Image (cartoon, rainbow, N blue to C red; front, side, top):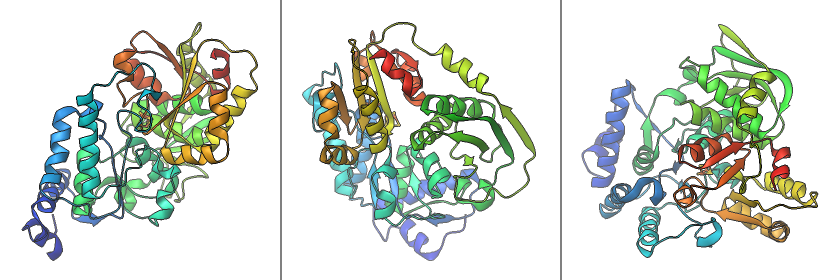
Length: 400
Ligand code: F3S
């Protein structure tokens, strides 16, 4: 791999041992993939920071970099953690020991010492991060959260591979990543187009479409998707699904992705609404459920507003709990316009900084049933032993 003189100096330790170690790993991974050089990044977003997910070995890995004196070379933000820092009880049924909380706090302090901004959300794009750090179409970043990576590449035109937590951390320290995959113009040009019958896809339908495409797309280039999405949260759910059910880091969405999908389309695949409905029906709840959940990836302000309005229009209520997860920044906006109060008046619990998946929710709630409009939440909750179901947003009111 070609390295410039500055990179050689970093590797020789002139900018500290931590930066040298981080760059060494980036170079090794890049070389194993056949990358020809490195690329400077403008921002990093680190996932894998929930103690629930990474445990003591992850804590040790992060803390070791702090002990080596590591500092992030670029603005760096982080993903949700294992509980809501403002209210440990906002996630139903959690019992957290003092040691558990101390371990999560150590992870946060280590990241903060290295220079991270603790936004604690998987939707940095709803917290004005791109505007604040002047991230524009064509800029290179290293993001670790797969759903955010797909959103960055497909909607913002900001380029990132799916770095995974440790690599995003090392890229943040080194200020660089390997020039490979989604960073390269040609690798972003689609060759296979998926054409979906012209109906407006809601969040759950969009998620199932993402699952279908991830299941059949075999090309190394991103798919070109010709579909109509009802709103921005539907697009968010679609992109979270393609990166959950498969390893896609991008989809060109006709009319939305800010890059021209030039090049020759060699294959066209039709997907019908019936294909989507069939999978959705298989996953719909048959009777009552215990919890109705939205906000995976974290909800936007508009999404939260629309959901609360829908619940307010429903006059009778059953026993289901309602949980919405969102960033603290969206929560503060909602608070300032009286939306949090309206939500609390109808019994909605708001989870900030975390979610039902990266928290220990599933360990404490094996017997509960959850219905969600998010394919990603459905996928992970099911795999963690929770009785999870998927439903269209408008149908969620039926279960409340
Ligand atoms: Fe975000 Fe948790 Fe879903 S981190 S993408 S809300 S699994």
